[in-house]
Image 1: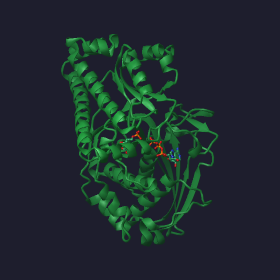
Image 2: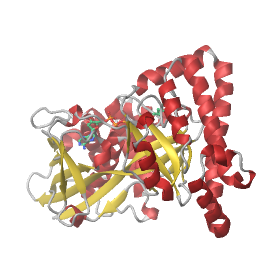
Image 3: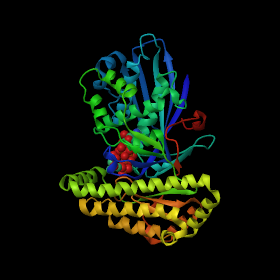
Amino acid sequence: MVQRAFSATGKALLAGGYLVLDPKYEAFVIALSARMYALNSVFESEAETRLCRITVNSPQFMNGSWSYTLDLDGLKSAGLAYPIVEKEGKRNPFIESTILVTVGYALEKDVLNEKTKAKDIHITIFSDPEYHSQLNSVRKESTNRSKQFLYHNKEITQVNKTGLGSSAGLVTSLTASLLSALFADFDIAQSSLNWKERVHNLAQVSHCKAQGKIGSGFDVASATFGSIIYQRFSPQLIHSVLDAVSDTNAKLVDLIDNQDWNMKHELCSMPPGIRLLMGDVIGGSETPKLVTKVQNWRKEKPEYSYKVWTELNSSNMRLVEALRKMDKLSETDKVRYSYLLNELAKNSDEDIASSPDLAELNQIGCAIKDIRKYLKIMTEETGAEIEPFEQTELLNAATNIKGVLGGVVPGAGGYDAICLLVSSEKLPQIFQDTSSNPSFGHVRWMNLAEQRDGLIEESYSNFAGLI
Ligand SMILES: Nc1ncnc2c1ncn2[C@@H]1O[C@H](COP(=O)(O)OP(=O)(O)OP(=O)(O)O)[C@@H](O)[C@H]1O
Ligand SMILES: C[C@@](O)(CCOP(=O)(O)O)CC(=O)O
């Protein structure tokens, strides 16, 4: 029996919300330490080689078990139209589409032919605590204490999400776990084999199929590649497979292996000593409604909205550039860099803005202020609550605290969360200052750190005692 484990990261879209839907613009996505894990155990037998059994267990949630028996000849001829049915009729669209797309790909690549042994694949999903509301949950840890998960007494669809991209993490880690069960040479560490790219491409197709729409895909890209500057692929690529009426598996293989996705996912991480602090705001917003309002505004005022987006984009890019410059400085001039970090810990954003000596920090602060200025214009123009009044108050209060360089509403904005750039050293003090400040009464600071890598292979033994 072979057993392997993979995990993918959650995300925060620090800059580029809405713009990222348009292939013209770039966005900055930070991968977060909340991970989704998919562990597999693969059993093989000589019998029934034209059947493949897959069971996915998600033990942290009530009724979190889905079992499928795939008729491989049926799947080969029906392709993506194959009627995948769970043993008891239970639905989980993200699991269904990931199985359909990944096994369909494997079949077309001939790794599940008459000569290969029948496979019985058992997958266990775990998700780190920050993905969901922690209310009424019980904590369990692995024997070696390296992993801790929360167990809920509700079904997955009934537990509140925090917006870190659980479905993208699930689809990405599950795709990797299934591929590793099906392909003997699956290895994401060996870049020449291109497996990470293939996981990404398959996961994008599965995620779009499950959602019934083609979004920008930044969440899947970051779950796979980590903290990145992202520029989307053309939606037409995915349409060409999902809308095809015949030979869908062959078209899928062509899309995954041969076509140029013409997208950008360039590694970009936070400079050392500066970290991201995410605050979960008790509230919540519906992203699709916000997106519709923004799209209507673009149609109604094409010229003005273009002008606003051009300015917003240049502010986003100035933030990326300023962070990159700081990162570089941390290597080229350690003395200056540690001086700047010390000053960041001692000063508020306003103090930094008025100190000509702190230009490198000020460039980051200014770019964040400009981003907020244009998001605020969009809020007023579109009627979509992107940075609503309450969030403005909160961000203003946060940026008055020493050690906070600035903050934004991440992603589509709304009442979901705030995202601050802060001095790592000052973090305990920031927690203390805000805990006694009523402005932060409805903010829960999340226990998250930035991650460089998205998809990684995990050590299976770290989960002992939980499976
Ligand atoms: N641990 C899990 N086990 C099984 N299914 C899961 C798990 N986590 C997420 N899912 C699937 O993903 C769905 C939630 O996806 P959805 O896209 O609505 O949320 P999200 O990705 O967390 O949110 P956002 O995109 O706003 O960050 C669940 O209903 C379930 O089908
Ligand atoms: C509005 C949008 O650009 C970002 C949504 O991000 P989030 O769901 O708020 O993390 C939509 C998208 O990119 O798919």
